[in-house]
Length: 147
Image (tube, rainbow, N blue to C red; front, side, top):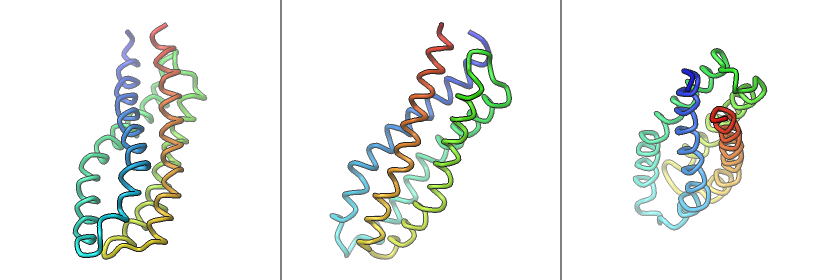
């Protein structure tokens, strides 16, 4: 295996982990926010934000670093369009996180707010779709690498 395989493998690990996590969050975790109840909601939201950051922060940083690595030191088995599309999808994910998800979590930080919650669930589909697309791209890259 070439040295370019290892960044690809690390990126696949991070992306596949984030794809599974985002689907769980989208289908199970975010919808359950409305069931927490008013008395403990603020503490729940604070813990959710703190603990989620501990899990997703390192994975997102690893994913971004390896995606950029594969663009700038791309092995021959990874087509340029695949590498750049992966980076573009990461940009969508990071921008969506910063501009859509984080503000809605902040709106939910002190109390449950039904419109903010509905917007969080609806806009999170952007990240869910982008991470799913990244997973398919990485499966194609892994297939090419193993040939």
